[in-house]
Image 1 (cartoon, rainbow, N blue to C red):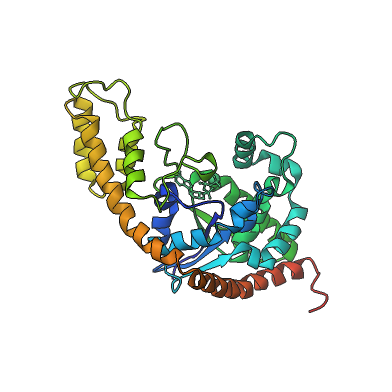
Image 2: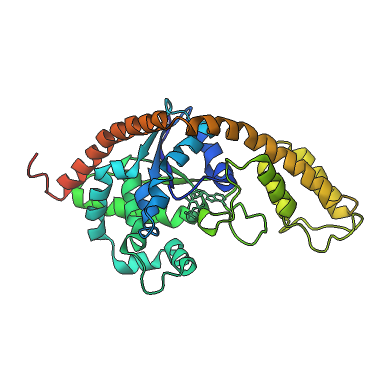
Length: 333
Ligand code: ATP
Ligand code: MG
């Protein structure tokens, strides 16, 4: 057991191939020799969906089914629900007093997300302050390692700033600083190559996509627009089919051979797409089949989540106790 890990996803939709390659595969590998907690972030999902709460509540068990279908094992990984852990919201309130508005405004990830989401003058306060709540999530599990995409690095930096400030107030190291663990693929593009695959952009290939949807997605996939004839030399950069082959195909040597052939000329898009399609069908078939059974047993999914959340209540309350102690506010205990 080398690290305590906290990871999670916003419950705002079905998980997709970006999640699979960016974090889920890594979590499945890590659960054998790390103490891992996964937080289904329903409250964080609400920060830009307050007007549409069903989008969040209706997706919690979908995310659970996705986790179990890819191989997250609840006996090894504790899966819990953010809204079931009052300590997280309380910690957020304590931390909010030691983080300035200008520091939040400087967070590059939030800045970029605000620009993308066209909130206008109505940025929800919960969205603007979500780095504080994310710091509460990480510290409440005493996580020293957080597997993330590179977009999340500013959150880790901000979390560690909060840790140092609280430890200074406490006069001892009651909170633990964390390190990011970067995944190999942090921004799987959508099939048109225009943006990152993302739930809110509606450009995903979900883990429950059926065979036809996978075929259609690969057919639509952006290649090299100047590769008109099979004999033309082709370009790999920006060619989504090769980006996906790099991300998903288990045979790296074959992918390398295909690249060289494509660059030289003589390899058609159709042939490369067939290889990718077969690979994606093989990746998603067992996940889809497992998931179909899991989602039909909502009672079982809920039971696992309830059990994991109960365990996490105990764990996170201990950290809350320490932080309240630092502020001299455990008056009734
Ligand atoms: P939303 O649209 O609600 O923001 P999303 O599809 O962007 O949803 P998130 O829940 O924001 O998904 O992502 C959680 C984590 O999943 C990210 O920090 C990242 O590690 C991983 N992830 C999401 N999308 C991708 C992607 N396209 N490529 C690689 N990793 C991804
Ligand atoms: Mg996102």
